Image (cartoon, rainbow, N blue to C red; front, side):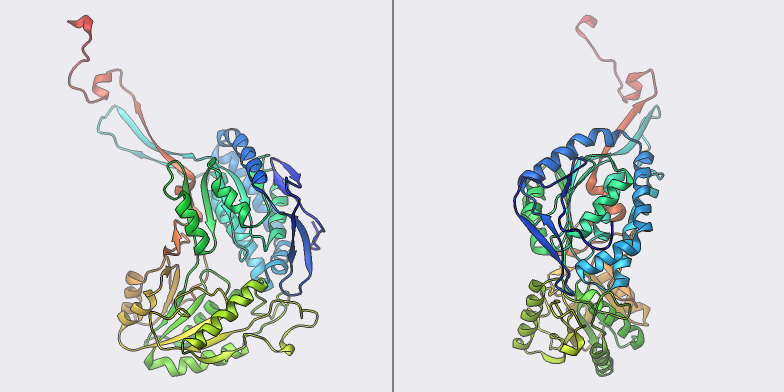
Length: 511
């Protein structure tokens, strides 16, 4: 497939490209230019039901294959992704707006996850455990759960789908995938790669569309597991609907109001690098982006001045240009939310330090006037737990500096005092402070002397509090997409001994 999007696309269900049952379509738009990238069918409940039926039908044959054979199919997917990294990376950048090195990194992370999942197929997939009886062997084995619904976000439109799907498929499940409506071209391209790699018909199914298509995936009780990455609001709705339903499983990774703690013992060069990367990479549109910098009073003034200087110089521009640091916001809705929270911060008493929220005309690249452009918005504010601007997720380059006095416990009080608990970081040269943060930080992803963004596929990726229920990545997702079976084998002819019984079974004929 070329890097120029075609005019119209289709769902992929049961091994066939199809227009589906609905008449409505929607358009993918380049957020940097406003250019239309392609037209896509808007999936309906009937399309989802058809996809689930196809996945159900394919399940028995797929699960009957060995781990190794299933992994061989995924290795072909790996090579598709690796061989076409530059092509797909450019599509990522054109469709979601993050700068080109991040677009390529999105694809690299995807094939790293496939590599992990396929390689894991040759590792143990259960446990041999001792039995109370010498003549018995006891095992715990894993069995696939069945049809897995994957609902994924736009900001990592290739990596996160493979966090969900790679392990799911190697474990023997089949998939119905609903990608984000902002990045359907990425979804289309991934589906084409799955076809090229020879994934059997019905094992992988793609339904494009909006939230109603995702809701149909959740509502279909033939979907045994739902894997979701996205907003806390939607994730909690999913949890309420199926989180306690017998026979169904859910794993959710949601948003955060993440913080970076800079102590009096920090190396400020490391602290500034961590803060800028955490706050502005991907235009602040990561679930792990930092929107709060909690800085000790002893280093606050120097840190503030240097951070402000860097924020003023962050390169906002064409995401396809190698020198760009920040591309556009993904769509107009995200721009509006960003400005609403900037205005809220002002009303709540913020002292604005950097206001590039609406970039000047000379900052917008030629030919990109219709893009969704934003820039860094930085302010300082006195800590108050009732302030919405420092407790609610913005999902943009909206950053609060909060000064603190006292020891690391005071920093942790501020850091933890939000309803979310996804990611966070501490910058300090004092290992005692680092260990205190490690032990008391209420996050699922913790970093020391690093930005709070990033991921490695072999590690869990999920949060606590409102940020998550499960970790839909790497080995952690195995718990959600498999059932454990306890299997016991008797090796003795003496059934009484094998069962640990002390007396023979009596029958009427014995009396």
